[in-house]
Image (cartoon, rainbow, N blue to C red; front, top):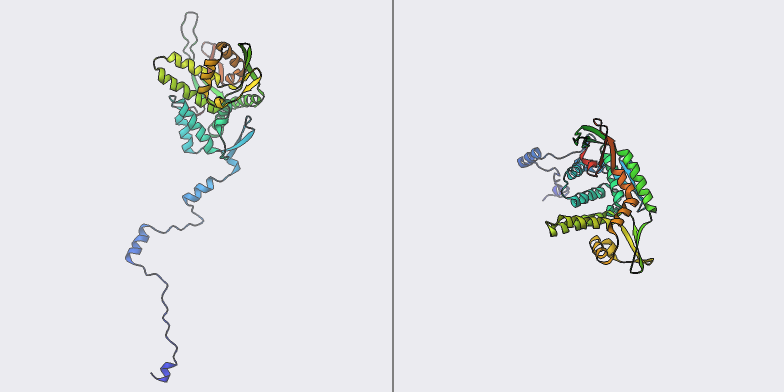
Amino acid sequence: MTEENSNKPPVTIKKSTSKKTSIHDNIEETINPKKVETDNTISFDALSKLLSTNDASGFYDITIPSLGKTYSFKQLTVGQQRSISKNSEDFKDRELQTKIRLGIIKQICLDKDIDPEKFTWPEFVYTLAQIRDNNFTDDIAFTLTCHNKDDEGNECLGKFDYTVDLGSIIKKLETVITEAININKSYSFEMNGHNIEFILNYPITKKYLDMINYGSKFKTKVNDKLEDAEDLSLSAFAYSYIRQIKFDDKPVEGSMYNNIEALSKFIDSTFKFDFNDYLIKLDENFKQYIDVLNITTTCPKCGKEVKFSLDIDDFFIRS
């Protein structure tokens, strides 16, 4: 090696950082092109997140007086609208219907700690009415048939359209659930020289579910004895209003209040009182809620009164 060559700096070979493309790469890029987001596009994930953000303009509040809370609700999605409407058309399973509605209330409420099973039954109905009012329309259309009879016993059979103003129903329900906080109704009777008192108020929705389940179980057991099953369901319904039992002014404590089946069996096997008189007392004390859903109008054909009851199914299966 000469001195001239030894003084030359070593040769540095710089590797190319560019990736060689192959035929395979070109084909892959053609089939699955890389997604490049620009200001003019948005991904499905980004769209979902954007629409699920808490934009107050799309929300409405519902106050539940018995719990002393106000909850914020978002609008129903198309899928939820379809689910709750389809569910309302199936009158076979009332327990399943109620559970689906409870589930939707939880889904659309911003407060994830909400427990609609603790709502009183009128509060549950009020909440469903509000959901209908804020997601569909505030009018419910019916086509009624008059079954009034003339002096000769012939039915009128006149058909006519009637529209229920849901807004007015909501206001009446609001009055019912607000005044229910201060309800201090009771039913008392004497037995073996002692005073027995039932402290009454509207049942919570969980008790309503338990009542349905209890009645349906008994109906399955008796099978052909439907009258017995109906009597038991009526008892369960009547006893679901009992919040507390007092014996000579001493509160009777225990978990039985939360089990309508056990409570019904205990009352039927322990106490002696006039059950029909008790039903009358319930009707007197809580008829305000029942009256809200009872509609009276006039048949344009015969001019006589036509009465019908608004059911919560009507909130979602009618336009």
